Each structure stands twice: as structure tokens, then as C-alpha cells.
Image (cartoon, rainbow, N blue to C red; front, side):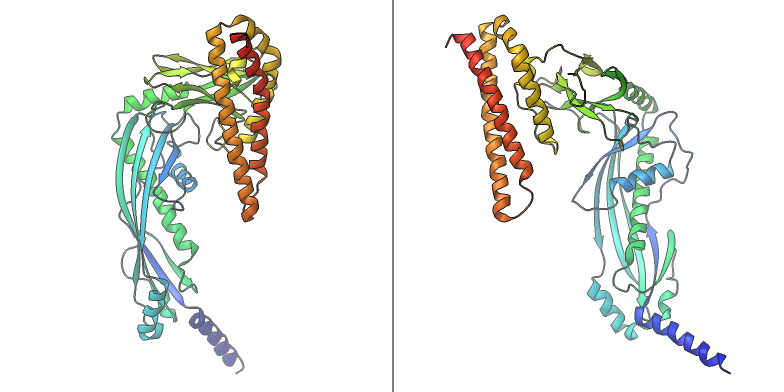
Length: 433
């Protein structure tokens, strides 16, 4: 006799929990499904999801998720290796659904949440994919739009756990609780499927591409993985154009240096600009230096048929003064490290190379060098003042850390102090004044 009251009490507790927390069910429909073929391949050619353009910040799925799903779906196609042909994704998304208040109102007006009525959260995607060669030329491209709908209903009663009529392209969901927010599981399901659809759009583009061109472009890109010697030890390097679009004047080629795998997920131990396109559309070699090397290591590039093809590594006996006159690129987060290193080499070049420059160079060359030094000093003065002002603003508004900008200002002024005696010596050698 005692078991019945206990059982009834237990059922009452369960029912109360359901009523208090609410119940929900959802089904998913999609207008696009990726090809279901894990063995899909394009011969030996491999592809890498290398760059992404989003219409606005915070849009999902993220590049990391797209990469993960693409490699899981098609392991014989997609790779993390930089030798893979780069795939660029241009991605837009718009969402529409009932507001949280509307969802609550919907429950209230439908027999106080007893009879569930479905509503739809709609997610629209527009994807443009392009597969590129090493020079940013498009090998194939495709644009696709697709829609993922989340059809759901909610109820304060167990009726909310009934399956919603209609097909579901993804596994259905049933939840107790979480009436207003549909929860991370539903969001993740939409994002995962969208990532797989994007990989499918790439596959569709590749199926219509010229396969001979894909193979040739892949072999050319693989040739850009080279072994170089730094400090007497072998390292892997990769020669790559910065950016994903067709080059224009000012575009650069960079040399990335790795200790191990040449991959997107591995951080290069060093990198340097080795070529730049001039106003005529011609690639010109640039002399740069590896900051990670113990000995002064200069890197540049060989150019054949107006294409940078192979890295060149040298170890000059003395730092060439002319290579360190111009202000280095200070746009990156490691700008202080770059400037500190460059200041040290500039100081060494002043002490070890300046005398030969003054003796050997012509008057016109020295005057050109003096002009470069003066422009560099003006640029450094402006950068030092801007950094100082930013630091002061942070202090006054109590926002951010002023230390990095203070350090940058100090390093700019240190470089000016190194350049001043060089300028005086060069001007005296050129004009006698």
C-alpha cells in the first residue's frame, strides 16, 4: 500500500519539474546538403581553407569550424599544409526569428502553454568561394545561397516533447527547460551544418574546374616549400604572396620560416618581405633580414618571368648601412620587437659600415642617402609623437595599457639619435659642410 503513494509522489515531482521548466522540440530543414563522399579527391591535388571575408564581425560559422568540418568530410581533399591551393571564402548571413517576448506571448495565448504551436527561426547564407593559384589568379569560383530553418515549439507541458510534423534533415532535438533561449546545442547544429555546406560549395566549384590547371597550380605551389640554412641548421621555408587577391603595386611576397611543418596552424619562427610589386606591375627583389637568426642573415628572392620563384639566403660580413636607413614596418603587434632589433643592427652598421660608404660612394649617392635619412627622421618623429599622445590619452581616460605606446615612442627617439650622426657624416662627405 505504501508503494502507490510513493510512486504517485514521484510522478508528481517529475510532472512539476516539466511544468515549471517547460518542454521543447525542434526539427531542421536545409536547402543544401554537402556531397556525402569521404573518399572524394582530385588526384594528388590538395586544398587549404586559407582566407575568409565576413560581411560583419561575429558571424558564424568561424573559420576554424569551417576548416574542421571540411577536413572531416573530405580528408583526401582539404589540408592544413600551406602548399595546398588556397581557398577564399566570402561569407554573408542573415537571421530572422520571433523575439523572446513574442515566443513567451505565443505560449501564453495558446491555452497558457498547453498546446504547442510551431515557429521558425530562419538562417540565410550567401557563400562565394574561389580557388586561387600562388599569384592570386582564380582557378575556379562559385556562388551559392542556402537556407537552414529551425522549426520548433515550446510548451509548459509534456506535449512540447512531441515530434514536430514534417521532415528533419538533421537529427531532431528534444529538451526540457530553456524556453526562451534555444540553447547552444541548436546553435551548434546550425553552424556545423552551415560549415559543411560551405565545404560542399567548394567541392561543386572544383568539379567544374579545369583539372589540368589545378594540377599545374598545385605543383607550382608545392615548389615554394624550400629548405634553407639558418645559423648552419636546415629549416623549412615557404614563399607566399601576402593577401589573396590579384597583386597590385605595393603587393608583397613574404618568406615564412618554420622549424617543422609548413602549415597554417603552425606559427612561423620568422618571416620577411622578399619582393614587392612596383608601379609598372613588375616584381622587384627586396633585401630583408631574419630577426630570429643569431648571425646576421639576409633573405631575398630570385625572380623568373616576373614571378618570385626561390628564396636566396646570405650572411653578409657587415650590415649594409643602406638596408637599415628606412623605418621598418610598425603596423604589427610585434612592432616594438622589430624596431628594437632594427635599431641594434643600425647601430652596428653605423660603426662598421659607415666609413666605407663615405669613402666609396659618389656625391650623388651620398646626397640621396642623406635625403632618405632625413625622411626617416621625420617619419620617426611623427610616429614617436603619435605614440606619446596615445599613451597620454590612455592615462587620462584610464583606458588600456599605455606601456606599449610609451615603449614605441622611446624606441623611435633612440633610432633618431642613431641616425643624426650618420646624417651629419654623410652630408659632410657629400658637401664638405
